[in-house]
Image 1 (cartoon, rainbow, N blue to C red):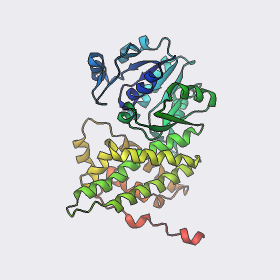
Image 2: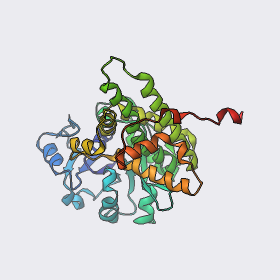
Image 3: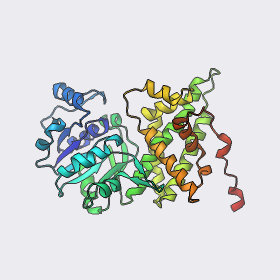
Image 4: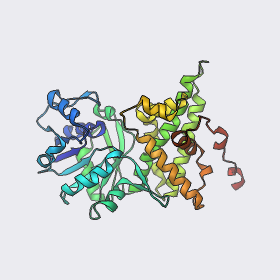
Length: 349
């Protein structure tokens, strides 16, 4: 059996301990600098305060604070990066140099960096470029809630990386009858797909907020579905621009559906749809990491830069542009429904 050290004891990183333990592996769960209370609670009674689940009581699951990382790493076969997108540079600066080169790294962190030239860079490529040119980092993408995985709900995800044989080895460590794993070498495609869905989950949830605000009993299903549909269309076009395998849209759409059911991305969109300003939303969600705002802003910035170069046309992304106006330009909610129409489609037949 293998030893897996998970760095970042948030919900998703911690939930991965479930299939690993079921497969007989030893799991060392290391809290980030922000996870001290989580580790304290786990040490006390195995209860995870944000996951709201008890983790298994077994000698094969051990808990460490970040100051104890040097004790957690010896004998490790695989490291899992479980930090949020706000910890990407911390992980690159503080953690990567401490991980021996012969230990593979698997990341659950979702997001992208928007470059000055308008291009979007997924985190495995960003880490390699900025912090460790000699290391390839593998990653997880696809529809999966941490609580669902902890409860052993049937889950289908993908692992990506450049080396198929190493991917197969990593898959063998994690896969169970309920945690089903596809493999792909299209790192940009998978990682871009699951990053984009956060911003578009926010966009789709705006319709849910509009529905809750109504007092006429109408559920606004058509409107919400239209936002889901437009989100899929815009994500598809972005994946196409990034030269990805377009089959990755399945992970974007699956993850989009999961994310609009619950979570912070949904909550931000919900509150915007009810008519709150972004400042009011941030005040209501004070203290929570709002990754959907980051990725929506970065993606819109990239589209605008590329539009100025005539590489993309921001008019093809009306939903994204309106979300960015809500988030960063103090705009009033006014979903551009008519702009979703694809005027020239029939002319190309």
